[in-house]
Length: 591
Image (cartoon, rainbow, N blue to C red; front, side):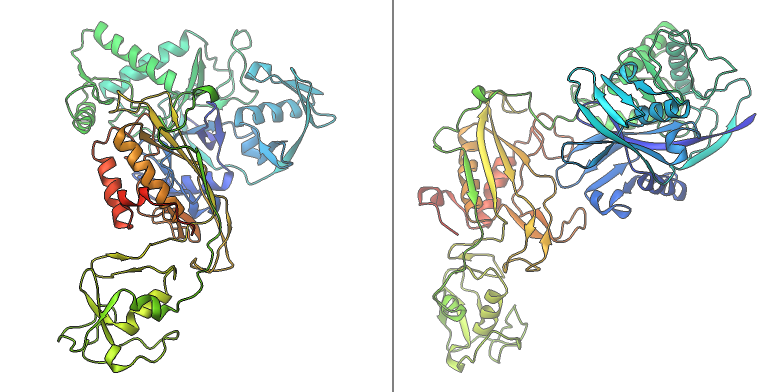
């Protein structure tokens, strides 16, 4: 055995199908979490980079999850030669239209660094699938089709983390399952399942390229007809026609293919199934992972794990696919929602209400109580027969005869002084909400920042609603400065994940929900400014207790369809905010 080292780069898959690297600091953090707990389930990226506070990496499924929008993206753990750009701490970047710098993909950065090390005057990126020419003399990138020229730069950064371990002397390139769950370079699991998968992968690789003992880590021979990805190729990453795959985090006695790209994963699964059937080994298909079978998906997953642990072969089917957005829709196909004349609604800054004092507002909803019962005020927890326990500012003297009041609709009783203090701590919009039963008096409004709400019909159906088209709602709120109704007036607030796309069925009930959502938007109740319960970030725009569906064609995060109870649940949530069908017949309030 001989020892070898490799540089670890964690990458995520963007919407264009390209693997984008995390920063060196983030990669060091992920590796530290794995070392501290090899069986760890997740990594909070906000602990190392505040800009990534909404993101979590699930190490079991190898996905990045954005908590405020529910977006899932695959991630992978890739390995490179220590002499490559990530190992030396070099970061290659190009200048974007905004004048800031964007990092090249890791593969491209490695190729650029290798060409520079060889003192080449230029580098053609066509073999990597990009129509660009790198001019090292002028440090520019030239578009081969438009001839547009952009500046590039090489920046020194923190080197990516390094791992090392034993390798067989007969191999100078690492096999696709030679990593252990703790980051060491160990041999594959000897169970029948893993050996079969290893045989299928090895067969697929040997049909496209051969590995010579004289080659460096992961390099293909010069005579291969496939494009060379880089001079310092990636360890544990293999290109095959139609896709690529790389090693993730295999654990003993289980099958881990989460790091593979989707086309490669499908090919491996099909090839494995064919190989198992051809070998005469009895197999048990574990389907239902995509919900096509009456057997519950969780039961299928547990069955697969148990069979794999017992050394039995398992035929896996395609994993469920996250579908956040509908297929592309042309402008001519976008139609207004029937019954609603406009397709856009804006809100502006809250205007302060003038006129009545807080005490006058509260008294509108109260009846005098001359003989208070022997009960406690549930606001200050003092006896109603005695004085209010509130001692703060903003409340004037109140006579003994008016010290206790009964709310007119629900009948709950409180100290008048306590209700005035509660009103002063709210939006002071002329409304009052009973702290016991939540009955709303007046018109409740919120502290939603200024923004825009768009809504229209698109020619696609939601899962569970095949008989109608879909309504798409697009919320857009920019970051800004908090006003007097917000937790920290004068302090900036962030707005993560905007624009946010949400979906309703274009049915009678779906349109009813949309009309009520428009009322909630006008009253500034859809969003609020506060602390995110999922990311912990403070002073940010958050949902305000009215649930929306942000997945169009799937329900992997619980924020998609089908969900038969969703529309009824939203109606109840809006009712709790004081919004009912009666409000849609009234004129839009200006708040």
